[in-house]
Image (tube, rainbow, N blue to C red; front, side, top):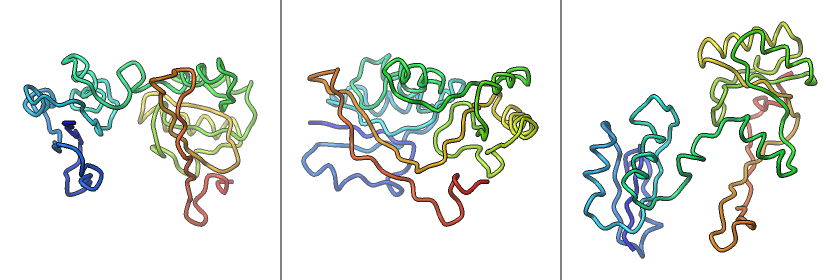
Length: 211
């Protein structure tokens, strides 16, 4: 099998060779302009699959990971990872999908203006104010956990000024665990769930201690 690995990092930062002893593979660091770089890297090379490790979801950035996905789709090249329909769902879309399948989700909403904060009356404090659609801890500070409407307004304004809007949701006091779930091509109703991992925060740095 011929594999092309696309990454926005240099191979010195991430060398996957230990996993590819049995494959004919090549590593490409994607650089702007993305379209020219990828076309030069993959066209006419007869790769069986592209292992896409590029990140970034800014729809306005033609060099983001989202742009890489859209380009691979337009070239009709098989690649790993989410397609453009699932690459960057909003938290509200994820909440709706989870609830439709009977899964609990932190109750919340997207706030684009100060008037949207009235929806917080239906939630239980403490709340947490987040980047509207980020991964990891982008934009989070100890003050992101709020106990009052006044604190909520302050943190909303901080996020809105920087990111355009904010996700406001009920704060869940507990452990933080992530689990990767992927489609089972033989049975789409029975997906694969990989081994969960737990985030271990440094002493004094857990969200549970932001009180």
